Each structure stands twice: as structure tokens, then as C-alpha cells.
Amino acid sequence: MSDNNKNDREPLSEIVAGRVAVSAALDGGREINCLYIAKLAESAALGALMAKARAANIVCKNVSREKLDRLCPGVNHQGVAASMAASAYAEVEDILEAARQKDEPPLVIICELEDPHNLGAVIRTAEAAGAHGVIIPKRRAVALTGAVAKAACGALESVPVARVTNLVDTVKRLKEQGLWIYGADMQGESWCGQDYGSPAVLVIGSEGGGMSRLLRENCDVLVSLPMYGRLSSLNASVAAGIILYEITRVRHGIKSYNK
Image (cartoon, rainbow, N blue to C red; front, side, top):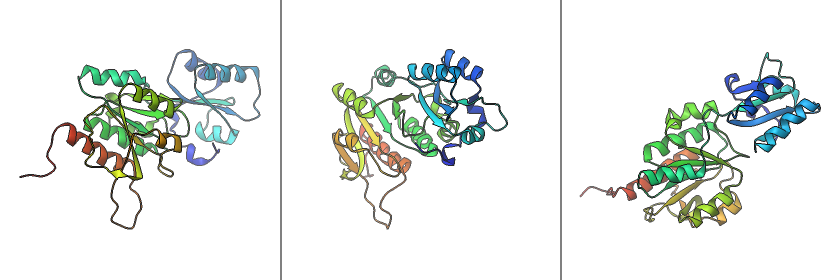
């Protein structure tokens, strides 16, 4: 991933910097989105921190010292910083258990989103629509940052979010457990008229490229929204909201018109 300014938006309150502070966060089991190590900053201490992070399956990135300076202005970061999650991550099984506790067919959203405001908006809509949880990937997508928490408007307190290494493998396991996979795609069938009553997963791809090829190939049904204007697509969180509420309408037996 490129080392550029668009990834430097995390507020200082979410960053732990310095070897002792980062080591303590790792040892304490804190939820960490990513470990940043300065390029060419080789030392036994930094190597040990990186090894500890990788053993815990935490994403590690080599970045320039200039980026570390921007992430933690005025702080002696000693070549290392860690981005902390705004909320604790759940496990995929926690999401399915939440559905079992409510005696409802699971409704799960998978997101490959890069924009924190989009992810936060999806989580907020998921809570309002009665979804049981959200799944995001560890790489090439936004994590649970402060910006996500702000956009979610408190929904992170009640919507479990799981972070997985491989979305395709996760989808395959969910299919084995009886969940039907619906992918939002411009080439799909109509979003309405689908049987959303069964255990379901809604997949929302990235803002720019949509779903990855392998993820698309592992969907059971691709659904799309009609576009009658000049634009070819909707904002990812808006599209997710429309489809989620169609799923909710079907599941709750709400008529689409008044007689």
C-alpha cells in the first residue's frame, strides 16, 4: 500500500507511539488495527515488536519517518507507532450467535470499504435494520478508526464487527453453515423480488472497483439497483442501505404498497 497522506487521517488519540508504549499495548491485548515501523529503522527492539505483532496476526507496515511524524506530531515515536481500534473486534461466530440468541435467521454485511464514513454509515444502517453484524477484511480496507465510530453514531456499541484475514474463505464457511450470499453488483439481478427470508449475507464491494473477482464468483446471487440518471453507480453506503431495507421489508412482511 502506498505511503501517502490519505492514510494519515487517524487522530492522535488513536495512536500509541514509542517502543515501550507499543510493547505494552501488544502485551496487554489491546485491539490494534496496524503497526507502523519506520523504513530502514533496524534494531533488535523494533524487530521484536514486529515479530510480536505478526504472531498476533496484526497488520504491519513499513512507512517513512515523515509519515510517522504526521501520525504522531510532536511525539518521539522512536520509529514505531500503533493504530488502536475504536472498538473491540468480534469473531464471526459472535455474529451468528447474536442471531441465534434472537431466534432470527442471520443477516450479515460484508464490506470491502476504504472510506471510514462509508463504513460507519453502513454500521449505523445495519443497526437500524436489525442486522446481526458486519465483517471487514484486515487488508486493503478501512479498520475501526475514530472516524468510523463517529459516522456510526453509537451503533458500534451494539453491532459486532469481525475483522478477518480472507473474505473469500469466510464466505465459503458461511455458505457451509447455510447462509445465502447476495453481492451488490451493477451487473446483477433486480434488488427487489429476491427471497431474503433465509439466513443471508450482503456483500458490499469497494468504492472504486466494487467486489473483488473471487468474492463475486463466490456469491450465490448478484443484485443491482436501477440507475435512471447520468451516474453509473450509487455511494456504497447508500446502496447498502437501500438493499438492507428491502431485506428488512421482506423479513418483516411489510407490504411495498398500501391497498
